[in-house]
Each structure stands twice: as structure tokens, then as C-alpha cells.
Amino acid sequence: MTEDEARAWLRAQFSVPRETWDRLERYVALLLHAAEEQNLIAESTKAHIWARHIVDSAQLLLLAEEAGEGGWVDLGSGAGLPGMVIACLGERSVLMVESRRKRIGFLEEVIGELDLRNASVFGGRVEVVPPQAAAVISARAYAPLPRLLESAVHIGDKNTLWVLPKGRNAEIELETARPAWQGAFHVERSVTDVESAIIVARGVEPVTRRARA
Ligand SMILES: C[S@@+](CC[C@H](N)C(=O)[O-])C[C@H]1O[C@@H](n2cnc3c(N)ncnc32)[C@H](O)[C@@H]1O
Figure 1 (cartoon, rainbow, N blue to C red):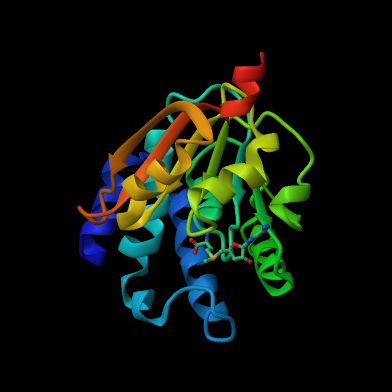
Figure 2: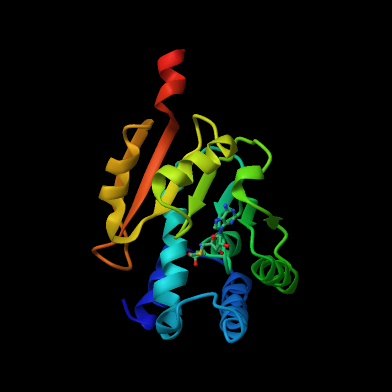
């Protein structure tokens, strides 16, 4: 997907006001600027930021259309991928969880600059986010699936929709997690790279919890 194709895809998928596009453009500019000083995105992806990062994040909104009412929690947001893109394009409240101080600072700065009222940051580890029933949980390049679920199961409930971009290892990670985790898992292809995939899951819980019930 070229950068032009990425922008065209976004316009075709999301009919949002001019103000939203301006926010997204501003976020990209802030991200590229901050990436000069912090290692926020891989150097090789800077020239392809719309396809590799913005569309890659935005596609999760389409996969989450069936989620129930409630907030979206993004684990290990880093520079705000996908959390900031979701907050720009969608209407849900988005909580971005990030433990590294400089990245927390960047996320807070972007929220202020863009006046993004539906976005907030939890500056700390996923493991200590207060228990809640998020409608959607996302995590991109945060942790291998078993550790990801272990660290965040308290943030969701049986209705939570998990949308987890997993690159080329989605099936392998799913097989690794299956002995310890049950729920309705499936794999969706990424629109940005035919070999990449996104794990989508609902009703996720440890095997032992249901077995004990
Ligand atoms: C590889 S980066 C990916 C960032 C972003 N999601 C992306 O796709 O570009 C992983 C991020 O997760 C954060 N992280 C890792 N473990 C964490 C934890 N237990 N709690 C909160 N943040 C964590 C790291 O600080 C880092 O910013």
C-alpha cells in the first residue's frame, strides 16, 4: 500500500469531518517531529507512516464495530499507535496505557495540542491499571499473546472485544496461548500487508477459571 493509497483508503472507510483529518495530519506531524529525538517508530517506516502506522491502526476500528458500549483501552501505546488514531477517528473514550516516561509525556502533549477530549493516558504498567470492563482492548507490538492476556485480563470482562495486530506470527502466538486461554478467537488479515494478521477475540478467560466454575 502506497502513501496515496493509504490516504485514499482512510477517506473511503471513514467519512469524517475536515477537522478530524486536520487532527490526524497534526498527529502525524507531531509524531515525526518527536521521533527525531525519541525512538518512537522504526526509521525505515517514517516515509510510509500513513500505510505502516495510521492505516494499520485505523483498521482496528472496523474490526471493533460489533463491540458493545464503553471505553477502549490500548495497551503499551508507545507513540499512540493505535490509541491516538482510534481517538482521532472514533467516538469512544480511549485510555492509552504506557509505562515509559518520555512516551507518556509525548502522549499527553498530543492530547493537549489536538484538544482530544475522548483520549487520556494511564502513565504506568498495564498490570496495575484499575480493574474495569473495557468494551475494546487493543495492543500493538506490546507483548506475546500469553503475556499480553495475563497482564490485562483484569481490564476486560466476558464481553470485551480484543483486537490485537500480530504481524506474521498471529497463528503461532494463538497456538501458544490456547492451552491456558479460552474464548472465541479468530484471525483477520491486515489491509496493509497480506502476510500480517490481527487476532480478534471475545469471551477471553483463563482455562482454569471456567473449569473451576
Ligand atoms: C514496541 S512498543 C509499541 C508501541 C506502539 N503500540 C506501536 O505499535 O508503535 C511497546 C510499548 O509498550 C510499552 N510497554 C511494555 N510493557 C508495558 C507494560 N507492562 N505496561 C505499560 N507499557 C508497557 C513500552 O514502553 C513501549 O512503549
